[in-house]
Length: 239
Ligand code: SF4
Image 1 (tube, helix red, strand yellow):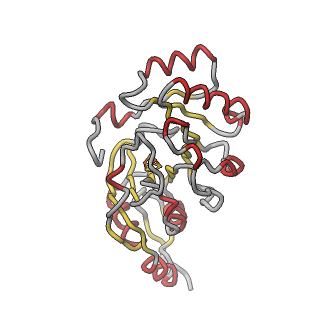
Image 2 (spheres, helix red, strand yellow):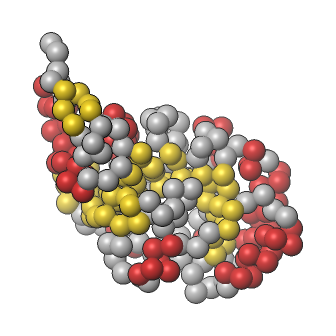
Image 3 (cartoon, rainbow, N blue to C red):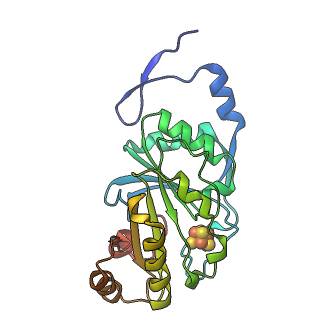
């Protein structure tokens, strides 16, 4: 059976999902906290207008978490409904975030479906769940949890073997102890040779200039980054 060509929200030609796929998309469900349009504030994709699909739930409890509202609640939606909402925004970049998206098995078909529709797709994940099955077209932005997060024991080190050169590892740094831990780890596993490594300070705890000066003094091959959306809009939710 041939499928009728159509034009997706990014203006690219694509092929309408066959009926069987359509039915599958109706049966796959996700718990969704919010879907909104903003500027990507982090990662190598910083600055792009991006639709964020925030999935609910996370088994971690990072001490400095800024999305605790997504731990619980959310609305159960089928995959097709999520895709329909994403299309209405008409932008090229989509970020699946949380919470911890990979805590929901249906995050994998969501990522694959978004990539198939031609979006530039990124995934923000804690590093505590395997990324082995994530679609290869997806830009993985994976945290490694430093000791100051309280969740360093959750790092799934096997994930490093699955990272692509185009992916990012992000480490949020609370203090000098975190920095020394992260710098030693970057050097030990030559993390910068695997992918882009990003160091960000915990907002309100570590002065950005202090972290920047540590990186420069050590000539550490990592990228310093502030959360751009917080520079622009503070802690406002849905921005
Ligand atoms: S993994 Fe992310 S969402 Fe979960 S507690 Fe840590 S910062 Fe918050």
